[in-house]
Amino acid sequence: MALIEAASPHVMNTYGRLPIALSHGQGVRVWDVNGKSYLDALGGIAVNTLGHNHPKLVPALQDQIARLIHCSNYYHVPGQEQLAKRLVELSGLTNAFFCSSGLEANEAALKLARKFGHDKGIKRPEIVVYEKAFHGRSIATLSATGNPKLQKGFEPLVEGFIRVPVNEIEALRKATEGNPNVVAVFMETIQGEGGINAMQVDYLRLVRKLCDERDWLLMIDEVQSGMGRTGKWFAHQWAGIKPDVMPLAKGLGSGVPIGAVVAGPKAANIFQPGNHGSTFGGNPLAMRAGIETIRIMEEDALLENAAHVGAHLKVALSRELGRAPGVKDIRGQGLMIGVELDRPCGVLAGRAVEAGLLLSVTADSVIRLVPPLILTTAEADEVVALLAPLVKTFLAE
Image 1 (cartoon, one colour):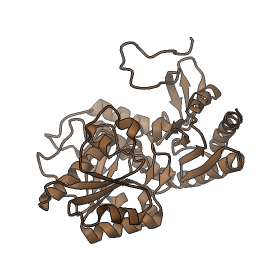
Image 2: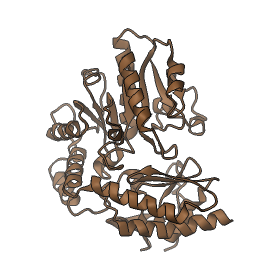
Image 3: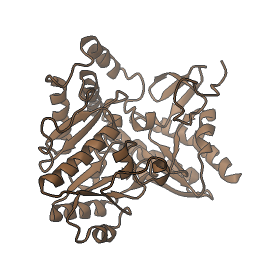
Image 4: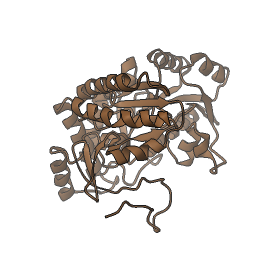
């Protein structure tokens, strides 16, 4: 069977796909329909927390499918209470709302912030967002996103956003000074699509303090950096702070579509019946996936594994590529790592596939590695052994 050269004529041409189709997986490896194997350092873009065909997850999902996949939020869903309880325990927040994706979770956060403002008598609420941010592709989340390329062709964008640079507290103060309409600051702890750019610990603490002083909501998008990826349940926990609103998705269901918004006391009761909802959100299958993902992560000590293997991977990448001309930076935390080159390197995603490695290139020049959290140090070494020659060859061209 030959490589797949073109998209189906019946599927909208929305993705620049690589010419392979995956058939099945085991652990951190996947196989295409031709039988070729690949080391998965992308994890479905930080989604496949437990890798593929996990021996504890699969039977639990099979059990749930045989019981009930979907009902409706007209009725109580016991799994929602179970998963909400776990997320509250892990985050130190108070309540959760469930949806089906990161975009939906971020959209809910934006609605929460606006209603928070309206409840205070602010008629035109404004939300602080960041350069290079990515929060989704709906009209509102696209407007919050800091990427003009993605926004082009979808104007007019939604108003009510104030954009500031990352890690500059004085810029944030200046952009909001004397503005009574500001209601929230909305950030990713580590920007994923923006190029693995982290908010500094001191900055996070200063923003938390500023939000408290000015009665704003601190809303931290943990869609990509959350669920143990950095070695803590949520990346902002490295700074010892709590947000008021925390969108989650991606790794929460280990591949089953799921999203959540976890809120603290300041935001937990803003939504009332009729204010927000989601047809598929909180369905029994997605809830079981979230419950089992957390259970298995705890049983198998995957937070510790992410921290340990991530540190090992970063050191190995630095050893092999840190001094290579053209490598600008190797950054990230846990198993969320970016290798920034001094030139656009999108071609490397295709070359990596040819070499048997799955990864992505984001922000034009950053190689993104977000593998399953079950990755071992031996597999991390294998990632480096496959990737380093590709990067060196590319930079020598």
